[in-house]
Length: 312
Image (cartoon, rainbow, N blue to C red; front, side, top):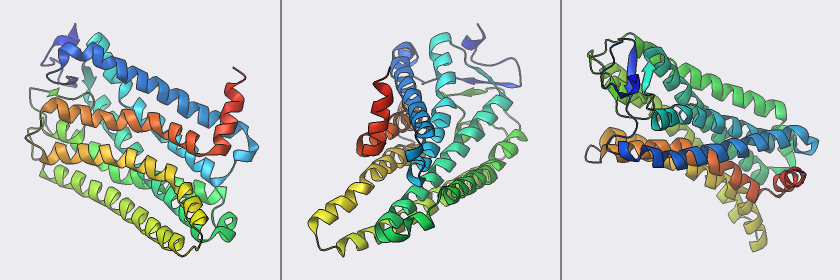
């Protein structure tokens, strides 16, 4: 089988090696992979279905939740099917164009999701700090436009990475010690000068994540200031409760991503399989838990989901 070859004879292909050092456990590792992926798809498609069917849920907050669900589906689908084919069938071959396409979509979806989390923080800021003007400031059309801006930003910033990589020469050994095509891992296989590529990917990461986290921190700084001005402790609790789901989703999304990105670039002493497992946590755990978090914390959505699940 071609999946067992460590050096592809076809110069237009790479080899995705899965999780180095844990090849014997690939079948067992595939169990949480497939379980998390299935739960993620069911949960996110359920949210999309319920919101589309229920007219009362056609509000900015639920439109944002649908956008988040779409990015969660895209994030996990970019990685998990190919990873499972490696674990189950040793189907490790991937074309250069397929690898770069996967890289582009994965990073573009991640950047879009980050923009959606910023918009969610802005939504919470308006809901708490200027509730009387909420319906006029945040309309469905405006939310859709903000989502489109986030998508365009992601495409413009991420697209140069695979385009420039496509023009670089690659060495004979084209084995990627990963379950998917991560930019730094692909750059390491190039025989050319990748300093520009490495600098651009790092700057892009800092621009997207740095800017988005700054805007989120600013929003929550203003939210906390507004909450502290409230005289009633009950009002404090109620206001904070409206932000709980968003805070949990942010922590779930940014923490594994930042930890994986930093350890991949600066954690040379960390074992390779730890790097890969951390990188996979980012595309497995948040897509599964995001809808669960919002389903538990948002009564209106929970009731509507319950209505449809009771019919099954």
